[in-house]
Length: 88
Image 1 (tube, rainbow, N blue to C red):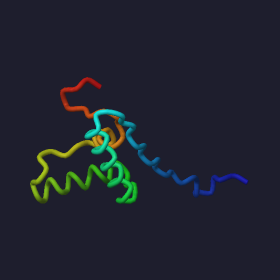
Image 2 (image 1 turned 90 degrees about the vertical axis):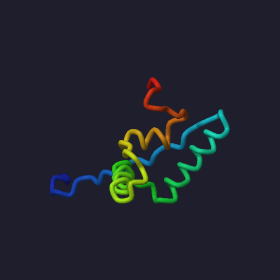
Image 3 (image 1 turned 60 degrees about the vertical axis):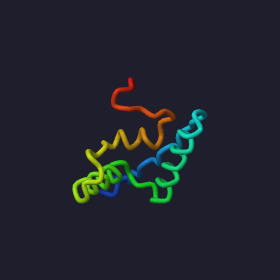
C-alpha cells in the first residue's frame, strides 16, 4: 500500500559527531566537555541551542551577541577552534 495517506516519514535530526582532537590537550578537553554537555542536555537540535543562547543574551545581557547554529555546530564538532578571523 502507498504511504500517501498523510502520515509520511518522521524526520529525526542526526546527532552531532564528537570532535576528534589530538592536540593541543586543552582543546581536546574543551571539545570533550562541550560534547558531554550536549549529550547530557538530550542532544538538542542546533536551532534550539542557538535560540536558548539568544534568549539568555536578551534576558540577562551575559552574552554579547549570540552564535548562529553553524557556529554552535563548529564549537561542538569541529576538531579545530576557529575565530571570526580564521580561514575556513
